[in-house]
Length: 52
Image (cartoon, rainbow, N blue to C red; front, top):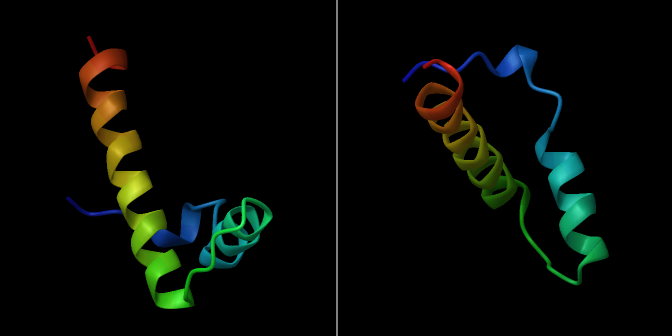
């Protein structure tokens, strides 16, 4: 599954800030993995529910 990272609005830096507000510490590398995973889930949701 190819994902265009230039069009993303949520960056690892934003994810880190959001998680820090909730008391979660995360490295930049792990934040990138979290963001990638969330975008994959969003694509899967879109394909399953909105493209019918």
